[in-house]
Length: 265
Image 1 (tube, helix red, strand yellow):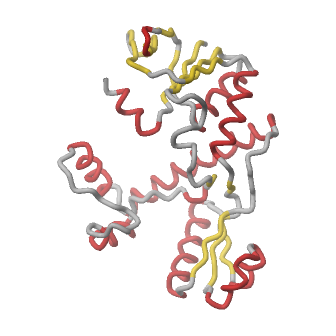
Image 2 (cartoon, helix red, strand yellow; image 1 turned 135 degrees about the horizontal axis):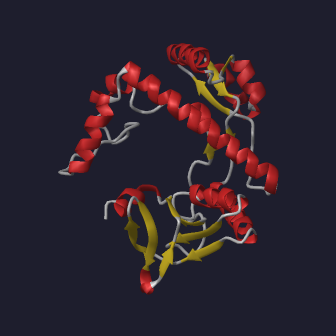
Image 3 (cartoon, one colour; image 1 turned 180 degrees about the vertical axis):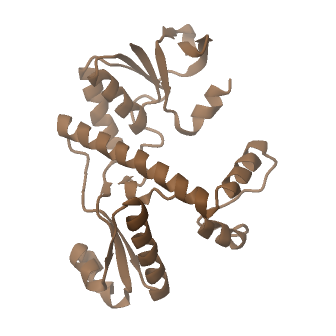
Protein backbone atom coordinates (compact mmCIF):
# COMPACT_ATOMS: atom_id res chain seq x y z
CA UNK A 1 0.00 0.00 0.00
CA UNK A 2 0.95 3.63 -0.51
CA UNK A 3 0.63 5.21 2.93
CA UNK A 4 1.11 8.90 3.70
CA UNK A 5 1.91 9.79 7.32
CA UNK A 6 1.17 13.39 8.29
CA UNK A 7 3.52 14.51 11.04
CA UNK A 8 7.15 13.61 11.76
CA UNK A 9 6.95 13.53 15.53
CA UNK A 10 7.61 10.42 17.59
CA UNK A 11 4.18 8.95 16.79
CA UNK A 12 4.34 9.67 13.06
CA UNK A 13 7.90 8.42 12.61
CA UNK A 14 7.28 5.29 14.69
CA UNK A 15 4.18 4.61 12.59
CA UNK A 16 6.21 5.09 9.41
CA UNK A 17 8.89 2.70 10.68
CA UNK A 18 6.39 -0.08 11.36
CA UNK A 19 4.72 0.46 7.96
CA UNK A 20 8.04 0.47 6.09
CA UNK A 21 9.14 -2.61 8.04
CA UNK A 22 6.01 -4.38 6.79
CA UNK A 23 6.84 -3.49 3.19
CA UNK A 24 4.51 -0.57 2.58
CA UNK A 25 5.48 2.44 0.47
CA UNK A 26 5.62 5.25 3.02
CA UNK A 27 5.80 9.03 2.69
CA UNK A 28 6.12 11.24 5.78
CA UNK A 29 5.19 14.93 5.58
CA UNK A 30 6.00 17.61 8.14
CA UNK A 31 5.97 21.40 8.00
CA UNK A 32 9.20 21.65 10.00
CA UNK A 33 12.63 21.15 8.45
CA UNK A 34 13.31 17.91 10.27
CA UNK A 35 11.78 15.23 12.49
CA UNK A 36 10.72 15.72 16.09
CA UNK A 37 10.78 19.52 16.11
CA UNK A 38 7.40 20.29 17.70
CA UNK A 39 5.71 18.31 20.51
CA UNK A 40 8.46 15.68 20.44
CA UNK A 41 11.25 18.27 20.72
CA UNK A 42 11.42 18.94 24.45
CA UNK A 43 8.71 17.02 26.27
CA UNK A 44 9.04 15.17 29.56
CA UNK A 45 10.55 12.10 27.94
CA UNK A 46 8.47 9.63 29.91
CA UNK A 47 7.38 6.26 28.54
CA UNK A 48 4.82 5.67 31.24
CA UNK A 49 2.13 3.05 30.57
CA UNK A 50 1.59 2.71 34.32
CA UNK A 51 0.26 6.28 34.33
CA UNK A 52 -2.71 5.40 32.15
CA UNK A 53 -5.34 6.80 34.50
CA UNK A 54 -7.13 9.77 32.86
CA UNK A 55 -7.48 13.21 34.41
CA UNK A 56 -11.26 12.72 34.18
CA UNK A 57 -11.86 10.82 37.42
CA UNK A 58 -13.76 11.31 40.70
CA UNK A 59 -10.72 12.74 42.52
CA UNK A 60 -10.33 15.46 39.89
CA UNK A 61 -14.04 16.28 40.10
CA UNK A 62 -13.72 16.73 43.86
CA UNK A 63 -10.72 19.05 43.49
CA UNK A 64 -11.94 20.99 40.46
CA UNK A 65 -13.84 23.79 42.26
CA UNK A 66 -10.70 24.80 44.13
CA UNK A 67 -8.62 24.74 40.94
CA UNK A 68 -10.79 26.91 38.70
CA UNK A 69 -9.38 30.26 39.81
CA UNK A 70 -5.78 29.15 40.42
CA UNK A 71 -3.05 29.82 37.86
CA UNK A 72 -0.84 27.13 39.44
CA UNK A 73 -3.49 24.41 39.52
CA UNK A 74 -2.73 20.98 38.02
CA UNK A 75 -5.49 21.69 35.50
CA UNK A 76 -5.89 25.33 34.39
CA UNK A 77 -9.18 26.37 32.81
CA UNK A 78 -9.26 29.46 30.58
CA UNK A 79 -12.69 31.06 30.59
CA UNK A 80 -13.52 32.12 27.05
CA UNK A 81 -16.28 31.91 24.45
CA UNK A 82 -15.11 28.75 22.71
CA UNK A 83 -17.82 26.23 21.83
CA UNK A 84 -15.32 23.40 21.37
CA UNK A 85 -13.83 24.06 24.80
CA UNK A 86 -17.23 23.99 26.50
CA UNK A 87 -18.25 20.82 24.68
CA UNK A 88 -14.99 19.22 25.80
CA UNK A 89 -15.62 20.41 29.35
CA UNK A 90 -19.04 18.79 29.47
CA UNK A 91 -17.67 15.51 28.10
CA UNK A 92 -14.82 15.70 30.63
CA UNK A 93 -17.27 16.07 33.52
CA UNK A 94 -19.41 13.21 32.20
CA UNK A 95 -16.34 10.95 32.36
CA UNK A 96 -15.49 11.80 35.96
CA UNK A 97 -17.68 9.01 37.35
CA UNK A 98 -16.05 5.99 38.96
CA UNK A 99 -17.37 3.62 36.27
CA UNK A 100 -16.22 5.82 33.38
CA UNK A 101 -12.80 6.39 34.94
CA UNK A 102 -12.26 2.66 35.41
CA UNK A 103 -13.38 1.91 31.85
CA UNK A 104 -11.15 4.62 30.39
CA UNK A 105 -8.18 3.57 32.54
CA UNK A 106 -8.51 -0.02 31.36
CA UNK A 107 -8.64 1.05 27.71
CA UNK A 108 -5.72 3.45 28.07
CA UNK A 109 -3.69 0.78 29.90
CA UNK A 110 -4.19 -1.74 27.09
CA UNK A 111 -3.19 0.85 24.49
CA UNK A 112 -0.18 1.98 26.53
CA UNK A 113 1.08 -1.59 26.93
CA UNK A 114 0.68 -2.14 23.18
CA UNK A 115 2.65 1.06 22.56
CA UNK A 116 5.41 -0.06 24.94
CA UNK A 117 5.64 -3.39 23.13
CA UNK A 118 5.99 -1.46 19.86
CA UNK A 119 8.81 0.58 21.38
CA UNK A 120 10.58 -2.58 22.47
CA UNK A 121 10.26 -4.02 18.97
CA UNK A 122 11.91 -0.93 17.49
CA UNK A 123 14.66 -1.00 20.11
CA UNK A 124 15.38 -4.67 19.49
CA UNK A 125 15.50 -4.18 15.72
CA UNK A 126 17.48 -0.94 15.54
CA UNK A 127 19.47 -0.70 18.76
CA UNK A 128 20.30 3.02 18.64
CA UNK A 129 20.75 5.16 21.75
CA UNK A 130 18.35 7.91 22.82
CA UNK A 131 19.43 8.55 26.44
CA UNK A 132 17.12 5.75 27.47
CA UNK A 133 16.68 4.43 31.00
CA UNK A 134 14.51 1.56 32.21
CA UNK A 135 14.49 2.10 35.97
CA UNK A 136 10.81 2.93 36.35
CA UNK A 137 9.28 6.16 37.62
CA UNK A 138 9.30 6.87 41.35
CA UNK A 139 6.83 9.22 43.06
CA UNK A 140 7.96 10.30 46.52
CA UNK A 141 5.79 11.76 49.28
CA UNK A 142 6.52 13.89 52.32
CA UNK A 143 2.93 13.87 53.59
CA UNK A 144 2.01 10.55 55.28
CA UNK A 145 -1.68 10.91 54.37
CA UNK A 146 -0.84 11.51 50.72
CA UNK A 147 1.53 8.55 50.74
CA UNK A 148 -1.06 6.24 52.32
CA UNK A 149 -3.70 7.29 49.79
CA UNK A 150 -1.30 6.82 46.87
CA UNK A 151 -0.27 3.41 48.18
CA UNK A 152 -3.88 2.25 48.48
CA UNK A 153 -4.68 3.52 45.00
CA UNK A 154 -1.60 1.83 43.53
CA UNK A 155 -2.60 -1.45 45.18
CA UNK A 156 -6.10 -1.14 43.73
CA UNK A 157 -4.76 -0.56 40.21
CA UNK A 158 -2.46 -3.55 40.58
CA UNK A 159 -5.24 -5.78 41.91
CA UNK A 160 -8.03 -4.78 39.51
CA UNK A 161 -6.19 -4.03 36.26
CA UNK A 162 -2.77 -5.60 36.69
CA UNK A 163 -0.92 -2.27 36.53
CA UNK A 164 2.27 -2.99 38.52
CA UNK A 165 3.35 -0.69 41.35
CA UNK A 166 5.67 -1.06 44.32
CA UNK A 167 5.05 0.82 47.57
CA UNK A 168 8.45 1.70 49.06
CA UNK A 169 9.79 2.91 52.40
CA UNK A 170 12.06 5.97 52.56
CA UNK A 171 15.11 3.70 52.74
CA UNK A 172 13.94 1.76 49.69
CA UNK A 173 13.39 5.03 47.81
CA UNK A 174 16.98 6.06 48.53
CA UNK A 175 18.28 2.64 47.52
CA UNK A 176 16.49 3.02 44.19
CA UNK A 177 17.52 6.67 43.73
CA UNK A 178 20.60 7.62 45.82
CA UNK A 179 20.14 11.32 45.00
CA UNK A 180 17.27 11.29 47.53
CA UNK A 181 19.65 10.53 50.43
CA UNK A 182 19.88 14.15 51.68
CA UNK A 183 16.08 14.32 52.11
CA UNK A 184 15.43 10.76 53.34
CA UNK A 185 14.32 11.92 56.79
CA UNK A 186 11.63 14.10 55.20
CA UNK A 187 10.14 11.27 53.14
CA UNK A 188 7.03 9.32 54.10
CA UNK A 189 7.64 6.85 51.29
CA UNK A 190 7.25 6.37 47.57
CA UNK A 191 5.40 4.50 44.84
CA UNK A 192 7.45 3.00 42.01
CA UNK A 193 6.06 2.17 38.57
CA UNK A 194 8.71 -0.43 37.62
CA UNK A 195 7.89 -0.98 33.94
CA UNK A 196 8.01 2.72 33.04
CA UNK A 197 10.95 4.17 31.13
CA UNK A 198 12.54 7.46 30.15
CA UNK A 199 14.26 8.77 27.04
CA UNK A 200 14.94 11.72 24.76
CA UNK A 201 11.94 11.84 22.41
CA UNK A 202 13.62 14.18 19.92
CA UNK A 203 16.76 12.05 19.70
CA UNK A 204 14.70 8.86 19.38
CA UNK A 205 12.63 10.42 16.59
CA UNK A 206 15.65 11.73 14.69
CA UNK A 207 17.43 8.38 14.84
CA UNK A 208 14.33 6.46 13.83
CA UNK A 209 13.68 8.81 10.90
CA UNK A 210 17.07 7.82 9.49
CA UNK A 211 16.03 4.17 9.72
CA UNK A 212 12.74 4.94 7.95
CA UNK A 213 14.69 6.51 5.09
CA UNK A 214 17.02 3.50 5.00
CA UNK A 215 13.98 1.25 4.59
CA UNK A 216 12.91 3.26 1.54
CA UNK A 217 10.57 5.73 3.22
CA UNK A 218 10.31 9.21 1.74
CA UNK A 219 10.60 12.13 4.19
CA UNK A 220 9.23 15.48 3.00
CA UNK A 221 10.17 18.27 5.40
CA UNK A 222 9.23 21.93 5.20
CA UNK A 223 5.94 21.12 3.46
CA UNK A 224 2.45 22.05 4.64
CA UNK A 225 -0.72 20.03 4.13
CA UNK A 226 -3.41 22.12 2.46
CA UNK A 227 -6.23 19.60 2.14
CA UNK A 228 -7.23 15.95 1.94
CA UNK A 229 -9.00 14.57 -1.10
CA UNK A 230 -11.62 11.90 -0.49
CA UNK A 231 -13.46 9.36 -2.58
CA UNK A 232 -16.18 7.15 -1.17
CA UNK A 233 -15.31 6.45 2.46
CA UNK A 234 -11.56 7.03 2.38
CA UNK A 235 -8.86 9.60 1.75
CA UNK A 236 -7.40 9.24 -1.74
CA UNK A 237 -4.78 11.99 -1.89
CA UNK A 238 -3.03 14.71 0.09
CA UNK A 239 -2.63 18.21 -1.33
CA UNK A 240 0.42 20.16 -0.19
CA UNK A 241 1.62 23.70 -0.65
CA UNK A 242 3.25 24.63 -3.96
CA UNK A 243 0.61 22.61 -5.80
CA UNK A 244 1.97 19.17 -4.90
CA UNK A 245 -0.49 16.28 -4.82
CA UNK A 246 0.33 12.83 -3.42
CA UNK A 247 -2.01 9.91 -4.03
CA UNK A 248 -2.46 7.41 -1.21
CA UNK A 249 -4.19 4.16 -0.39
CA UNK A 250 -4.25 5.23 3.26
CA UNK A 251 -3.38 8.32 5.29
CA UNK A 252 -2.30 8.43 8.94
CA UNK A 253 -2.79 11.79 10.67
CA UNK A 254 -0.22 12.15 13.48
CA UNK A 255 -0.18 15.93 13.82
CA UNK A 256 -0.97 16.25 17.51
CA UNK A 257 -3.41 19.04 18.30
CA UNK A 258 -3.47 20.08 14.63
CA UNK A 259 -5.04 16.77 13.56
CA UNK A 260 -8.70 17.68 14.29
CA UNK A 261 -8.25 21.06 12.61
CA UNK A 262 -7.20 19.33 9.39
CA UNK A 263 -9.82 16.58 9.54
CA UNK A 264 -12.65 19.08 9.93
CA UNK A 265 -11.89 20.80 6.64
